Image 1: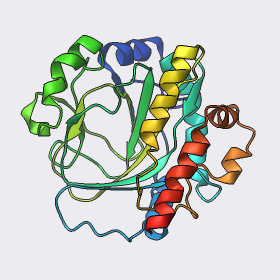
Image 2: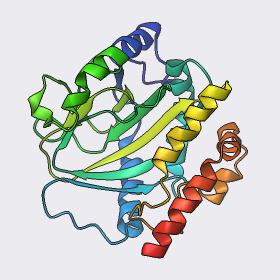
Image 3: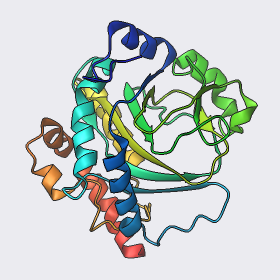
Image 4: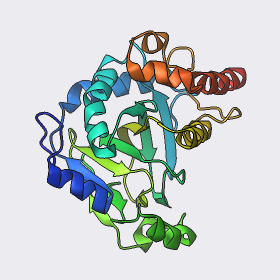
Length: 267
């Protein structure tokens, strides 16, 4: 497993990620400040307030402003790791706090032909029957993914997945094309961040724009306070980060602003 001191993976960890499509870093960060920040964000950022009374649930709030410094610090710390795994300069999507309840069926997070990395940190211990992520190793490879496509949406227990049990402070890194799901568990908190390669060709840029358009459809109400917790706060946009400038050049802020304008009109 990757070395948690620097978060720079060893060569064998990079091989593991590229062969199997996932990697776990144990005890990568102190979970307490992040858990406190997620709790605060969920407490005052959800619109309407949280009400998951059972069954499957999914609520989130972006954590990309000056009011979420722990989240932003972890994003900055993870960028070099993402660049190592993806093999080049990377762009973040947005960090967010997520609340899950119940099961998540088998699915992949992307079908865009771009290298992209999902990073998830559960803030409760998760086991096989309490919502731990299940993956199908190697299913990020196109031929395997095509064979699994008819099974998308199947219950997590229906396929022989590899169960990634974690403790707070652990990080799960996975190719966004990897088939994954979960089962069991009550309300559980997760911090999530995705990275993708900064496009270097016109074709890659076209796919990158499509990738972000899928994230920010103009008719989606995210269910969070878009003024208090925008996808990209003004401090992020003015931060001088290379990635912040590239996201603007790619039109990502325009997409996020349009989506949040729609959310504002529905809240």
